[in-house]
Figure 1 (spheres, rainbow, N blue to C red):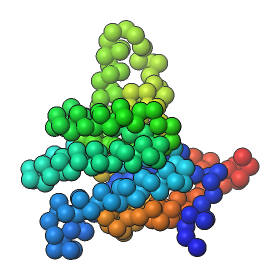
Figure 2 (cartoon, rainbow, N blue to C red; figure 1 turned 120 degrees about the horizontal axis):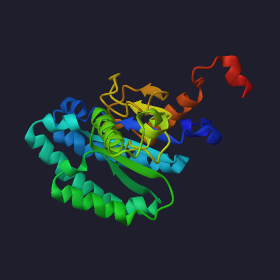
Figure 3 (tube, rainbow, N blue to C red; figure 1 turned 180 degrees about the vertical axis):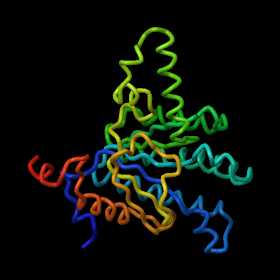
Figure 4 (cartoon, rainbow, N blue to C red; figure 1 turned 60 degrees about the vertical axis):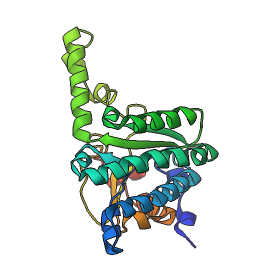
Length: 248
């Protein structure tokens, strides 16, 4: 019996976020170039996305490329951007087949023009799909996102459309990239690293964190289901005590 059979459908998180880590190390273990690991990692993306849609998740956000990743060797960046274009083009029909709607967040203007065009085309082509939302974080960092929100609110204050005393958590959240999504209840990171890496810092204030030693290219839907089972075994108290949670 696999982990899927142990998942309680009524206790599924609405939003799961994943830091896909370990492509380079996986390739190095195989005696291959890092770019080979990225190519194989695409299979893990497909497996995870389809597994998430199969189980009934509403939103899946994948950390695909951070603002810090622009500091990598140019050869690797070029390979990643070309892989991104090819993958989005090839996977769009599968997204439509699985009724998955594609979204993207981050400083997308920094992406090469061919990436921007293919990304927007796939977003448009899947816009009518009514199933799971697949949200790609591209050229994204949480600090960039938070500063962007602060600047937007500062401009509104300067324009007189909002008073500083009216700014609360709800107002701030409206200016984040994930404004239309619930905050992720579960954050998964692969490869054994146990850090957040500038990812959804505001949104994961009460997320359950799940770290697995599995390198991303080896990640399967069964690993996803295992993480969901672990999530459902945790008690989410949000500052309350166990007795208060049990009484709800």
